[in-house]
Length: 236
Image (cartoon, rainbow, N blue to C red; front, side, top):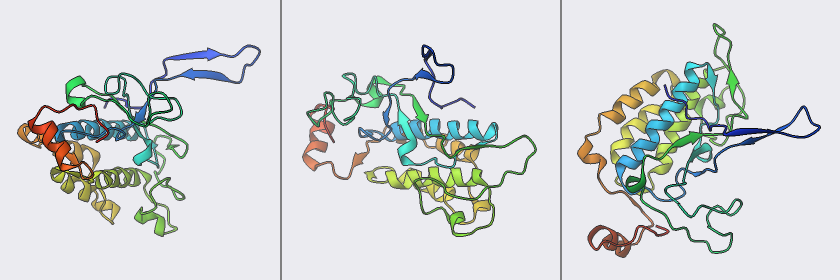
């Protein structure tokens, strides 16, 4: 399975300091910071996140916070002017409006999982059980009980909840069954990441070209983009 954790581009050692170093990584933005335009763009992102989480699980690592704000993308082609290093919804830190390109027009777009502050790596053969906090999502059913549970099943639940959070778009209905199967209350009945990938791959290619729209996107903007060749460089 491909590794979708953030690559380290370089390591800079600090003078007169043998305990600290600077890690150079690509600048990332939130995976949903600029809107998706087509169903295939969404399934591509999910495909990479499913792969990334399965890669971790294959190496006995439970992320334990596979939630919305820990899913990122390399936006260098989508937002070619870049984003401000603090005010990431601006180019320059002043004007809160990004110019961006459809993912389909500049892809492929790399997606990454970040923030391993709660992650646990299990020794080979060790029973994979855990208890305690699970980051951003407070709806995890296992959190309602004090008994140890499988944190790998929690990862699947958290990522499924991200899909539900994304159903702020019209046109993502083909993903509902996957999200439902990933977020079942009984962890033993949750779909595996491999099965989730298989279901993504079974969505017909014709459907992947379907337009999706943020529900906040005004009807006049939809008409302009869909029928009049309106610019994709927009906040919607």
